[in-house]
Length: 216
Image 1 (cartoon, rainbow, N blue to C red):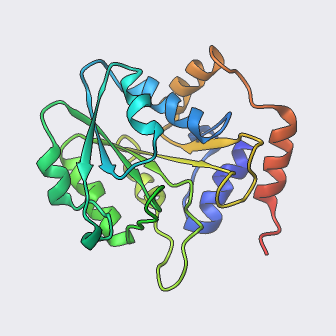
Image 2 (cartoon, one colour; image 1 turned 135 degrees about the horizontal axis):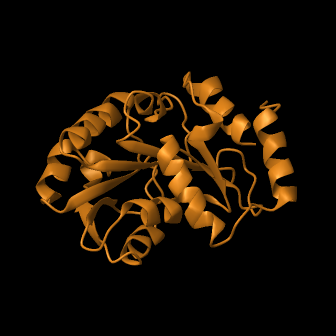
C-alpha cells in the first residue's frame, strides 16, 4: 500500500517517491496528528490561514504549541498571500498549515502561488504541512496544484498529507497517508506504533484497490 501511495504521486504529479517516504495512518486526521507530534515543541507558533478546518488549532494546542490564525479576505478568494503570512510571523513561528483546496472555503491556490509561499517559508525556516486531501477535486478553468513536486528537492521543509475519503470518495474506512522525509516518516511511525498501531487490514485492501484504479 505504501508503494501504491508513492506511485500515486508519481502518476499524477511526476514525483519520484520511495516507499520509505510514505506512512499510512488511520485516516487523514491521524496523519496530521503524527506530524504535529513529531515536529512541534511547546511554545512553537503555527500559522493557520482562516477560515480553517475545525481541528487544526486544537491539534496544535495538544502539543502546547500556539495556533495563529491568519485572516484572509473574501475579495482575495480567501487565499493567504505571502504578505499576510509575513505579517503574522514571529521568531517563534515553526510551521504553516497550507490547506488547498480548502475546507471550508473551497479556496484553491495556483501552482505559482503555492511555490511562492513555499519559497517564503523555506527562507524563514517555517516547515509546511500541506494538507492536500482534496487535491483532485479541482475543476476547470483551475488546474490541480501541489507541493509534492517541490518536496523532491526540499524534503526538510514540507510534508504532504492526504487521505482516501475526499478525492477517492472512500469515506469511513479511515485511511490517510503522508509523503515526507524518510526520517520524519520513521518518527511518525514510532508515534503511531505506540498509539493506534497499524491500519485495519480490510481497509488497507480497499485502499490498494482505490489506488490501483480504474479511475474513470
